[in-house]
Length: 184
Image (cartoon, rainbow, N blue to C red; front, side, top):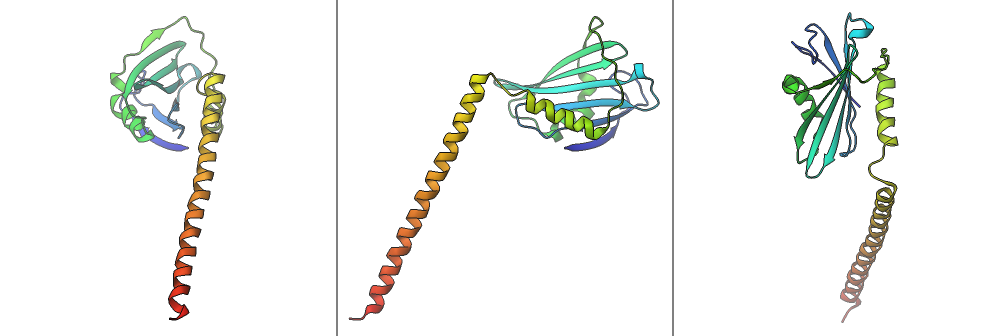
């Protein structure tokens, strides 16, 4: 879990003196969740809650930002590139390019009541959501397990082969050493 605190001159939704508290989970390359909560002397209706989901849509990684603010729901999508984004790249994006995001605003989505969540609990919830939302269908998950078991079996077999080769080389060296000292 990576925690950092940053100050912005202008927050995502326009409250200029709000400090951003970002929690980034170090997750598999498939999915990265980011919880953004603007805190300060704000009332319950002014709390901003956001989620960043990074998905792989071949050949690009896309970031989908969701924000809940003052009974509105906003969403933006950005292409992050062809390689999996690191938490450092996500942090740089949020600090320097957040204002350039084009949010689509929808007032019809009901907003759940947001209350302050303990950072540790927030971290656990983010990790739990990653574990429960496995990538792909059951068939894809089964294929992934099959690949992993084949990989483990191959690794074990290769280790045995390598050990046999080392033992054979040792035996040859030992025999050569004995022949050398046997005498004429």
